Structures are given as structure tokens and as C-alpha cells.
Image (cartoon, rainbow, N blue to C red; front, side, top):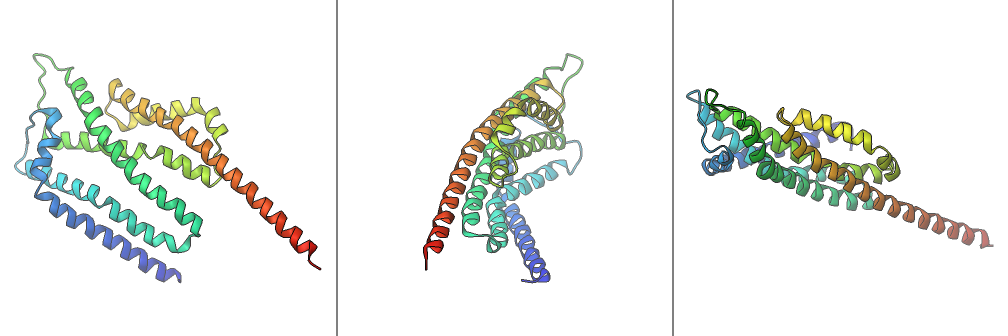
Length: 249
């Protein structure tokens, strides 16, 4: 297809993805009250400081439900846009990557909400005193929770990113293993940037991400061995073909 045809197809992907998010967000509105109750469970009770803040919280929650629910469909549409330009082997690999990305994102989001949010919230509220009592607004709390949940969904993509880069020949397992000290520093900085400013939240994010890094090294080693074996088999096949051609009168 021409460039304009590709752009037209991409526009269709973006429109369909946006409509899916909006429609599912509309559906999410009808369960948003229960979702808000689940969302604020770690906090107990919240207050809203403006007339529209409670409504805005439900609206944001419905939109978040729409985004999460539409993620598989969005990935499917993106896959449909990319797949025609790929070889059979690339399609097979990227199909597994798309499925794994979705699973890892949801696992990271669930870990962030059910593990990190209650601990971080209890830790931060522990700094209160008799003269310093918490009064958490709905808007501030939603921003706190959604930031952590989405951040964990993103950082859980680390094994997938490393696997893809290894498959593309950009990184190697030995290089990753040698760079573990740098990885610790980068993970510590990222944890400080993506979490609230307390040591507990940073450790709770940094330790799982560091474990994911070393898991990524193992996956990289397995993929590297497989690619090397496939390359060797391909070279042997080429040599056999050359021998056949050379022996043909």
C-alpha cells in the first residue's frame, strides 16, 4: 500500500480503538460505584472537597475501566495493522509477545493495587499525629492509586522488552548480566520517580523489578541459545544447498 493508504488504515485503528474505550467506559459507568468502593478500600473513607469531585471520581474510574477492558481489543487492532508486513516467523513471535504483554500488564496492575497501595498508604498515614490528622480527598487518592497501578503495569513489561531486544539481536544475556550494577541504579531511580516519596514504596517497587530484571536475563539466555541454534541449522542447510548445486552437472 502507499503511504496515504497506510495512514488511512492507521486512522481507522485509532478511531476504532478510541470508540472501544469510550463504549466500554460507558459500560463501566454502571459498575463504577462498586469499583470506587473497591478502589477506596485501602483508605477506608475519603472526602470530596468540591461539588463535582465525587462525580469526577466515578467518571475517571469508568474511564479507567474502559481503558483496561479495551486493552486486548486495542492490541488486536494494532496487530492487524502490523501483521501484513511481517514474515510468518515474525507473526508467530509477535503474537506471543502481544498476549504476554497483556498478561504482564494486568499482573503488574493487580500487584500494584493489592500489594503496594495498601502498604504505601498505611506507611504514609503513619506520619500523622494528634495534631496532624489525614483528610484524603477523592481526587488526590485516585491520582495516587492510578499512578502506582499503571506504573506497575508498565514496569512488568521488562521481561518482554528484553526478550524482544534479544530476539532482534540488540542485547545479549552476557551484557545484561555484566550490567547488573547499572540496572540496580536505574531501577532505584525509576522506583523513586514512579512511586510516592517514601522508602517503603520505592523498595516495594524496586525489589520486584530487580527480580524481573534477572528473570529477563534468563529469558534472554534461552532466546539467544535458540537463535544461535536456528542460525547454525540455517547455515548447514545453505551448505547442503551449495553442495547440491556444486555436484549438479
